[in-house]
Image (cartoon, rainbow, N blue to C red; front, side):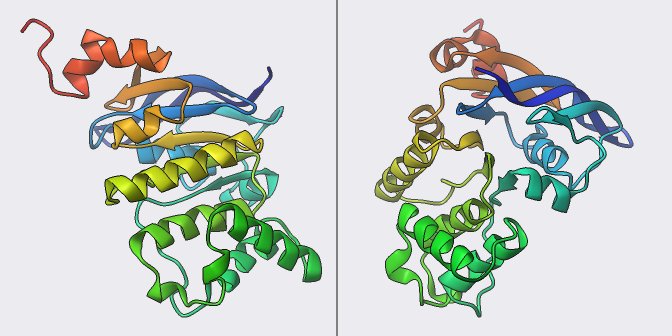
Length: 242
């Protein structure tokens, strides 16, 4: 299995605050990778570096065999990297369909019936087709989370980055979202998912990366990582000597 994304020695700081400290990892095509870390660990900053919202101070990023370190955010989207945001910010005055259509036309460069048919497929995949003509401002939190994912998928990404998409949901809503994310991954979309709702993350991902203060501290099979004394101490606040 080939690496779709390769992050090598990625570094970024704002004065004394380090958000990425020589971070390196690979994401294989078709994989589902989870990223854990306490608040302020640099998880969202890492996504911003991968998507081109932030420029790194050092290191490189390769995507689908191409170095993209100097490529801007719009260019990376067109190459096949899309993301959701922790707090959904849809175009509230537009319908669900129109929101996704913007992503299909601007992100995937689709036009006319091709764009419309693609959006219909994405809304069906994310469970939003019955809400296609509803204004985004009238959606529930779960529906807004689904729309975040739908807008990202409408750009036809090879790599989908999910930023705490399960946050704030009830247990039942979280279960519904897990099923959708699993289906998206099984359809061939590679996923990297930041999440504090650990049980939701572990239901989907096959590999975990743990970061703290911008530095990767552990990586591997989810069960082993969660049993690590270092991870329990840093992420869960458990003293390994107790």
